[in-house]
Length: 229
Image (cartoon, rainbow, N blue to C red; front, side):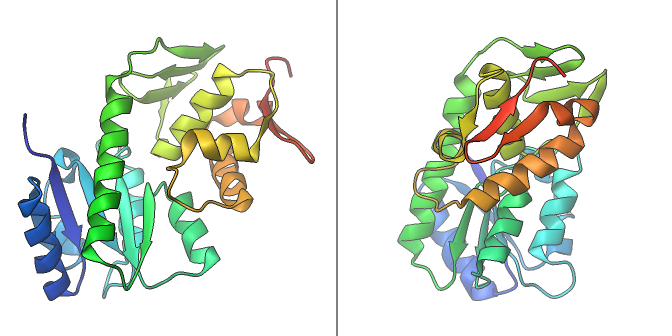
């Protein structure tokens, strides 16, 4: 089995070396970049996971993540943010960009390794699931290729947005609580607030065009994808 390729992007060179050493010892292929600009010189589409610092000189980790999410070749690249920015707004912004996890500095190497293993394991399981395509009128999800088309045009969704849309279409006309959505979409060991759900739903609505209005909020309950306008 090929080794999973992980890229560590952090302006702290010593931290990059420590993380890469431990990742290699755990059987991964690891490479470091000391800036977002340096990371972009590599073919990140061939990467299995990105460990990404937020506060870096030049392009920030958030800006890099946004650029990757807007590119079809890297839109579904798993990202774990490693950052000292630990406010709720920062975390919500990170998850809003499609982060798979958010680890606060200072952290232990063991904690990061556990998060890496969890995200990669979840990605492998999802990749092995061969569910049929989900569709509603001109909105179509290919669950094998992880692509979404809206009236024939490809929509670039983050992994979280993709999974939320799958969940809503699978349970069409059912009202799902925010907690149900959190339990189904986010990792079990990540603390996610109701606001994080709202942020991701708002972004999803914009990306699926005219079908966004079919995702309706039921005050006090949650969200529902209506099959009738």
